[in-house]
Amino acid sequence: MNNLELQKTANEVRKGIVTAVHSAKAGHPGGSLSAADIFTYLYFEEMNIDPADQKKPDRDRFVLSKGHTAPGLYSALANRGYFPVEDLKTLRKLGSYLQGHPCLQHVPGVDMSSGSLGQGLSTAVGMALAAKMDGKDFRTYCLCGDGEIQEGQIWEAAMFAGHRKLDNLVVIVDNNGLQIDGKIEDVCSPYPIDKKFEAFNFHVINVDGHDFDAIRAAFKEARETKGMPTCIIAHTLKGKGVSFMENQASWHGTAPNDEQYAVAMADLEKVGEALCQK
Amino acid sequence: MSEVKKIATRESYGNALAELGSQYPDLVVLDADLAAATKTGVFKKAFPDRHIDCGIAESNMVGIAAGMATTGKIPFVSSFAMFAAGRAYEQVRNSVGYPHLNVKIGATHAGITVGEDGASHQCNEDLALMRTIPGMVVMCPSDDVEAKAAVKAALDYVGPVYIRFGRSAVPVINDRPDYKFEMGKGVVVKEGSDLTIVATGICVSEAMEAADRLNAEGISTKVINIHTIKPLDTELIIAAAKETGKVVTVEEHSVIGGLGSAVCDCLSENYPTKVLKIGMNDVFGESGSAAALVKKYGLDADGIYAKIKDFLK
Image: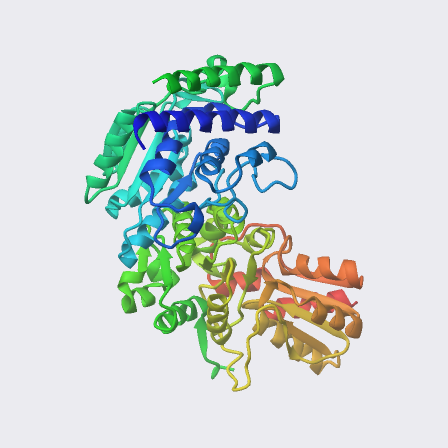
């Protein structure tokens, strides 16, 4: 996909996020929207996957360690053809397969259940290690939150991944700067994130997480990096694309009401229309 | 009795892994800097490429195992029960139990027979913790023969399994040609009609000795070895309660949440029966030799016998 196609797709992914969370009357729009461009790039450009053969053994793996941004993952999967986009409206509802947090057993395309913060990276490391042991060339991608990396288990996993030189593993940190209680540097600063991952023997790349040229270059650099895992720190805007949600910690885990939903969708329609003029 | 062969079930664990490694090429073993103690070092020697030392990071180890299981590996994660079931409880629950992954947890050094290390390392809560996880199989073998059979059974079963092993050498009581291990099935090791002792793990041999004394006094005592605490052989336990009327449970574990609780859950719903639970009475352990601790906390044959005599008064 070229950048314009990726931008259009990401805009559809954002519409799906807002629609799903509005319908559920609960969920996490802020961090889903900040990572929407990453989700889009992974599922529409980067990863070797096939919605028609979802469990193929050589597929690349993705673990959403920041599992609360399931609406972002689900919207990317739905738009990629894993299940109907219409089903996003069943998010978090009784009987829906779209659980509040990703569930391996029920959601098509999900490689690992997640949601309890800090645990996903270890499981991604396990997948990458298994590939190395068996000489398989599939790659494993793991998306973490910048608040999530306050969890100690992240650093246990990072130490192991660096020690084992897992160059088939890419950790992406969605550095939107906000967590539930406020700015990450005010709550309990994880900065400098890049120096920390470097110290754990990662190759670290800082990128603008909304610039597809930069994202493309970063994932290419990760592929070319041998002998160590890569950490891509994606500098993003929480709530990106919805005017009143942008850079507001309060939209971490709140659903828009009907009026707010209309404004949000109008914002995204406008972006979509502008992209169509290009 | 001095002729009885003794072996610690953690030794059996390491030996079983090494013996089964060729037959199960997907078997991998993870440890957290305790390979010499958990005995996974025996497997490491035979299959160095399939043994992964994760360093002192049990939570991460459980997560790695979960990720490996999604690719078709059969990981055994090993640490002391305190850290495998305690430290990493939430990882076992959320990264292994919830996605129902094919991860086996080989937890050694369970209970007070850890001995000298003391209360910080004596896990008397693991059976309770593991029992509460939906879909988790929980086993607690009584000796070398059963421990090896449990490892094999866990490998043949698809899904999460917790197996509890001990540090100290215990008598081999199941070394007979007709021995058969079936996950989820209790074994009547002594017949009797006045009283049933339901025991698990290293307490089975002590319970058998206590039963011998009771039998000698004319108290006909049945002994059931429960090697699988979940799923529990409820049929066998209900039948024994109906036959003998009184039930005693014995475990090297807290009386809260382990075998005793499982038996009471079963009987209170199906055939209300007076039950005496013998185990750690809601207390922490302490340093001492395994034998001295088992004696102090009444989990040896003398203690079991005395408590049952009191119960029968």
